[in-house]
Image 1 (cartoon, protein in one colour):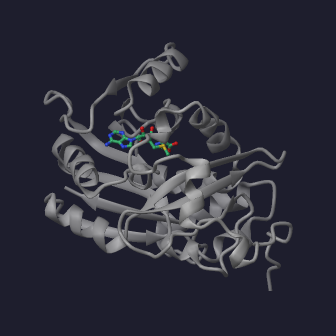
Image 2 (cartoon, rainbow, N blue to C red):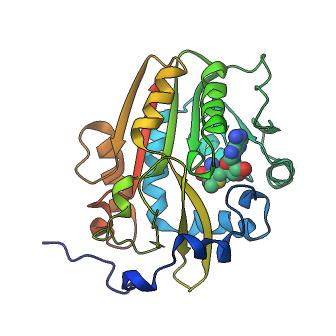
Image 3 (cartoon, rainbow, N blue to C red):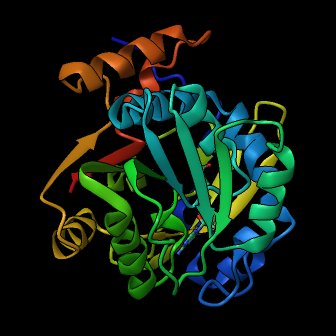
Length: 282
Ligand SMILES: C[S@@+](CC[C@H](N)C(=O)[O-])C[C@H]1O[C@@H](n2cnc3c(N)ncnc32)[C@H](O)[C@@H]1O
């Protein structure tokens, strides 16, 4: 039997855990404030690039997006790192889109020397320019950053409209099972929605091996809700993929290969799914 690797992180007693009313400590008003504009959010890409448990999830996204020689949309690109990974995975061209102007400015500055990588601010209420058409789109950790169903619906609709027929949208987010007491992850913790319902905020905490911590609020969207929005926005097909080492087929092979390539034994981490991917085809 594999020993769970997360020995060092002991969950606190339930009573010690933050409650919904403590949330303001980390993120003053989850309904109104956009964390992704804040200075604290600036640390996020350091975490995204340093937390090894994320890498296999992105590798599976890249396998499913299959970006080789394609025009790819990275919807909700923050400061561009996830777009650059799609380019590095072989895309012919990547356009990163975000609704926060400051993030787009940073992304342009950071990746100004990268050919075939461009960034565009698209406000929540606006469509993408009609002359942009993509073979594939990725939304990595974007739906958990959206706090209301109207914006969620509109984000998914906008990607649908910008895809060519047959194109795919690949969405990566936390798996609802990761909320259970039995799920323990080395660098993630404290994911405690008050209940598993649409739009419920919960605190997410990422820890680096050096002890640095970033805390932010995510919003839970039930798998059924995401699937039903994909249906209502006229995607033709949809598949829900739970990322565990038992995942069958080529996506599972991509996951296993990626987990095995890490320089630490992460297998314990991939038994209860931390992540879920939903892929829809237009
Ligand atoms: C957690 S970050 C994910 C960044 C990146 N995709 C990654 O994988 O690291 C979420 C991003 O989604 C953006 N976002 C949220 N709602 C959006 C919307 N309606 N339109 C465009 N971007 C949005 C936020 O501004 C933020 O930059």
